[in-house]
Length: 308
Image (cartoon, rainbow, N blue to C red; front, top):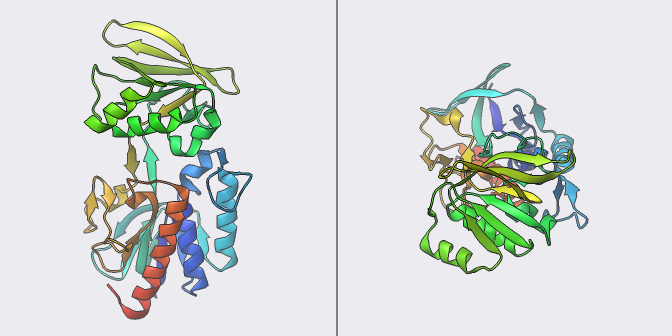
C-alpha cells in the first residue's frame, strides 16, 4: 500500500507540514536528506521567529520543530531522495535506502544561497559571513560591512544593512550595476552606501573567532587589497533545490516550483510545494513554516476529497 503522504525536505516548511499532517492522522513519511533543518542549521542567532523574544539558535529551533513533528507521529527518515516520478499516481520516491510510493507528495527541498567559494568563506559563515541581511543586519549595528553583487538583491541587502551598519561598501565585479534604475537610485542616494567597481572578493580573513576583512582584486588593474570589515553579505542569488524534478511534469519558473496562487498546489494534482523551493521573494523561516502548514492542509483536503 502506498503512503498517504511523503514530505521531501526537512527545513521549517517540511517540519511544519509534518506537524500538521501528523495531527490530521495522515502518518506522513518525511525524508530529511543530507541537511536536516536546511539553511537554518548554518545560522547562529535567529531573532525574528515569533515566540522567542530573546532569540534562538537556528539548529535549536530546527530540533524543536523536529521533536514536535515526532510527537504527533510523523515518521522522520534520514534517507536522501535521489529521484521522483510524479507523472501518475501513486507517485514514486526513490531514496538511497529504497523506493516508496505515495498518494500525495509535498516538495519542501528548500533553496541554497550561492556562495563565492573563496578561502575563509566557509570558516567564517555565521561569524561575519552571511547571505541574508533581513536575518542578520541587526547584528551589525554601528559596524562596517561589505556586500557582493550588482543586481536588485544586492541593492536590497545594502539598503537593509544601511539601517544598522555604520557603512556599507558594495563590491561590483564590473564597472556598472545590473540592478533596476529605481534600485540603483535608492542605493546611490544613501550616504552610508558606496561602491567599489571592478572589484572581486578573493579571500575572507579573520582572527579565528570572527571575520576581520576581505582580500579583494581589482580585475581592471590587477591590484590586490585588504579591506577591513566586520561583515560580508553575499547577494549573488539563490539556487532552488529542484534537481529532483528535472524531466518531471512539475512546472518550474526561474528554477522554482510554480504553485497556483493562494495555494501550494502545483500543476500536478496531489503534488504540493512549500518553503523556499517555491519562494524567490521572501525566503524567511516564518514564511516557509506558513506554507508548510498550507501544504499539509491542501494535501489533507486532496486526500479526503480529491480537490484539485
